[in-house]
Image 1 (cartoon, helix red, strand yellow):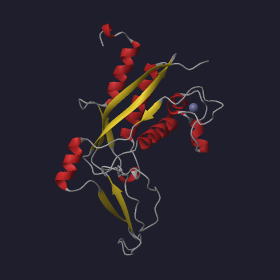
Image 2 (cartoon, helix red, strand yellow):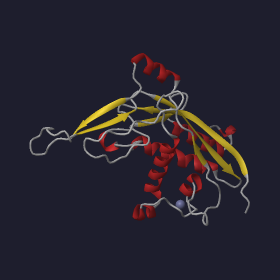
Image 3 (cartoon, rainbow, N blue to C red):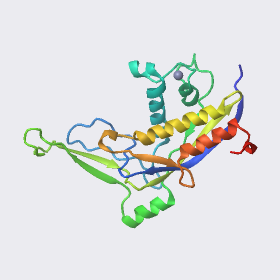
Image 4 (cartoon, rainbow, N blue to C red):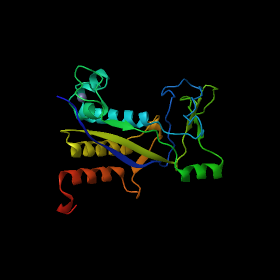
Length: 232
Ligand SMILES: [Zn+2]
């Protein structure tokens, strides 16, 4: 059956780094002791740090697979069933099972003007966190191999966040909006980027009125399910 594009919905909001820093980008999750972390990603022209859209898309998919796709937890690979909401929204790597193009497209998140103004006034746009590993016998960090350096985006930084959702003919778009709202809620309860177990990556997604972006998505889903004049 031919796939016909009905509309492309663009959702805009903000990604806010809460009380701990955010480590995203090209770095490795498992560093050797004393090894310096790769620097965070920066825009090639402005040189401001940014959050890659692929980091958000990947985390969103991984958390939804963790909840809804048991097969991914046994083989560690992305779901390729071609039928579940994860495959429909994020894409299916198996071309034989794929029924349609990927529906989701995430933009890179650039810092807001308020955040770049704040960074300029403070003279910083990132933080290098020095982490110490304690010798279990002495209780001290006594070796030169006991430090890890992790560059991260500072807490209190805000980024513009947006993604597009392709709606094809026959799609239950309200279900997709609700599913994505679930995914954003999961990231807020989990973490984004690296080192989540050590407190990094606590974020929230908001709309332009500082309300949870997931609430906006659920409201949009409701308006798709029921006519607007129905009292929503
Ligand atoms: Zn699937």
